[in-house]
Length: 182
Image 1 (cartoon, rainbow, N blue to C red):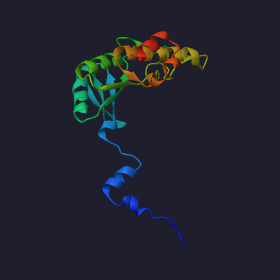
Image 2: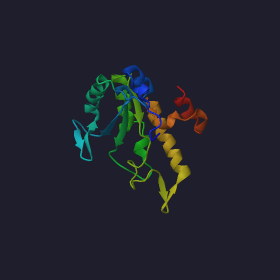
Image 3: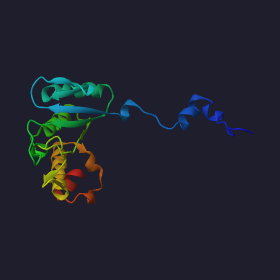
Image 4: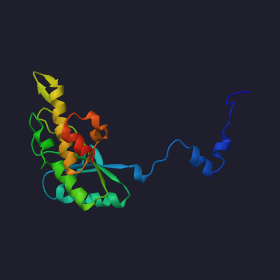
């Protein structure tokens, strides 16, 4: 007998069997909507490199989040665009920073929305690297401390950061493990 030896037509016999054996199913409830938050008022500017994605100011954010929620999308992923940058990415962990304020606004307006935040420093540093640079080298331990501060500030605002999905024992910072476990 030649190839193929088996012909699994029985698995395609009807819709019920096909739904039971298919590889995966994707629904709107599986989606996470990216949002890019910026300072200013009345801003909803399309991002050229990401068609149909927008830079949004806080005053335009909630209408967009409500639209996303009404479509059945249960989560948003926030990326902050800071007003200023410095070598320590201080805007990233500022309790009154753009992402932290956005998280609080979203959780107040749409409490059921899952808010995930981008825990990264590159957008907030003057040099564009995701950490502290000294003598041309990334300082890993000091950079991790800053990332912990970012995660803590986002968690205190009410977000679910990707880093928070780690087991509690993975967080050496005592305040992180207590906020993450809430």
